Length: 380
Image 1: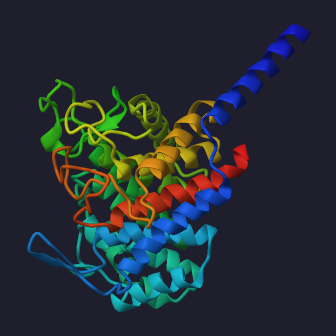
Image 2: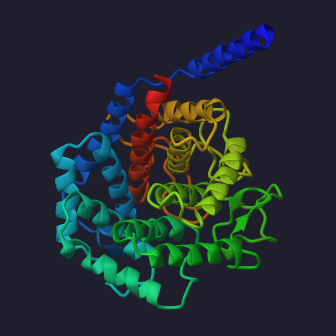
Image 3: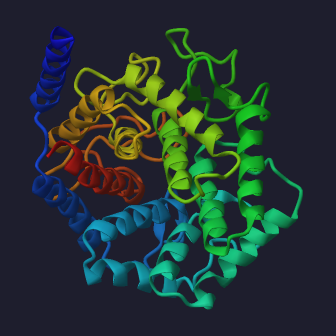
């Protein structure tokens, strides 16, 4: 019996040593670099009203790319509540009249993604007018029979957390039910057999990438950031729905399956490639997908869903790699793939190249930084 106990404690010590060997980041350093990245963005884009002008198209500053940034900013505000962060988000929402690109009747999740921030701001300072349009938009989706709106997997992250937040806020099951119906359709029915491949534990971006579509090396095409969007969405909805919600275990199962698959895809340097199963197809470091995986895994370890011994080294390796190789001295983020839907889009992805939109990559990094900061107490 004593021999078994001794071996057990030796294993614990060695395991802790392996984690420490990955150079555990200091909590102050985590916050410092996260603030640095955010400060760069807020200074460069100080006028939140300015629309983007990319590929000859003018887009307002409440589209999905900017909304993802504000998701990250609100996460940062939860650990570092600087007044300037709250005001930057609130005044942006005020400017857009708490509404959406293409109006309240839009069914496109890219357009109503901003509701995630409106709901977060409402929870800080309740005022029914802040979420009047959000509720109207969500009720339209609940009250109409369509479940096929999320035909590309990015939409799961843009739209799904809003249903979870509305369900939590109102206590009405209808939002959770519709959320499941839309998720289940995309997962199991869209395309030939749904967008999720349980065998590989990963998602095809949309039906155009279903088999027989293959990467150059003959493997299925699993786009890093697309899978990152789904992974982040699962975290964001599990953070909201009740412990007894009838589909919670389904979401947990998918999260665990994805976590195992993603762990196996990590590069030696800590990043993930843009193509998860084909490192030869525009291979190289990519920050936005890596940040979303760090965000999800950190949340999973912190909430006891992922084994600390197994996943903490993965998280630490990825975070240290981003800080060392992607974050510029002024806070600019390198190796962010611009907008697109597959590995070849917005290439090349380099340390110095500014992506077509800087906002969503910054938002992904802020989500990761804020979550690993909370995780720090586990290994500090």
